[in-house]
Length: 236
Image 1 (tube, rainbow, N blue to C red):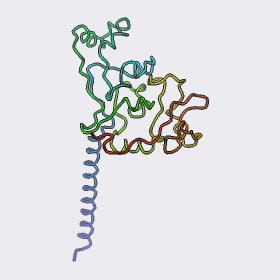
Image 2 (image 1 turned 90 degrees about the horizontal axis):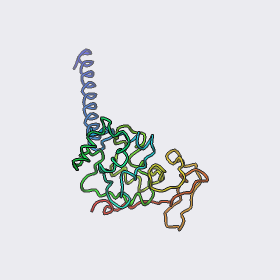
Image 3 (image 1 turned 90 degrees about the vertical axis):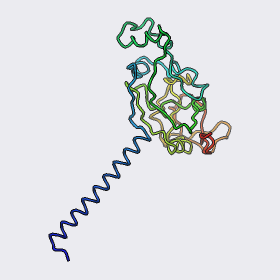
């Protein structure tokens, strides 16, 4: 039999051990989650490029720099020539432009550090999603508000499947800033509300109605339905 003091001490040690093990597992889980989801990941870049200045302040559309993405599986990094198109006359003498000018003069590419990277066994087609008029912010967040680009969404298989199953909960319909289409811009990000009027598919090819994502009076792009959930859609 343990004395009262020994019993109390044993309970204290047991509680401490349990809490320590829980903290250890929580730390491992958070480290693992961060390593796989990369939320908040923002790699250092050779040039301090601000999407907020270019897209947010000056309204340069996503597809102006990321050209041909509507025809390609991947989103190309703009060449230095794309930068010089504007900066040949705008702030060309600034300190930030030294690396860009040298790259252009020497015809040597700038090696940007990748922010988003899917596993090699996963195939994602940008063109298929853009041709469906899905806004870039659906996956990348509101980049036009970011001074430094960072990953804000966990692009896991679960996240992708949730979007394919219930696109009305995650998809942001194309905005003017994306350059995907030229309809008058609505506040499509803040209009993802189930209380909005239901829309009707044009040809009845979709599985169910979805909430209207655009403000009244603004032309709607084509409606979307559930995406494919077969393994071979992404893994081939």
